[in-house]
Picture (cartoon, rainbow, N blue to C red):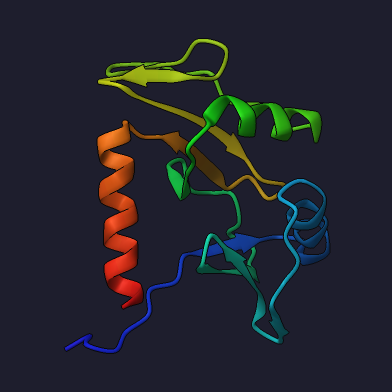
Length: 140
């Protein structure tokens, strides 16, 4: 079971035209495929499906996670494009200037044009190496 499956994150958009502008202007991505079901973007070698739905932005949790080797660099680039990062003060999660630091790892969250929450994380060097090895093993 699932020997040949491909997992794909799926994000809802209440306005697909607005979402396309966000993905292009803010994230620097254009669809690799567009059809009646929406758009598919390549994000770090992973397909992300953005489709139109009246339920866009209703999730109160992270809908997409991005792993980076330089959180400060990527946050600065996103801020230059108008992204505002969330501030949290919750049990176990406290951000300062949009950044949470915990056990050698750092993360920040922002919302796309449709209200979906996206996390960007800079893992510890050891965890980043694990993720890279896992990805290489999957790629075969």
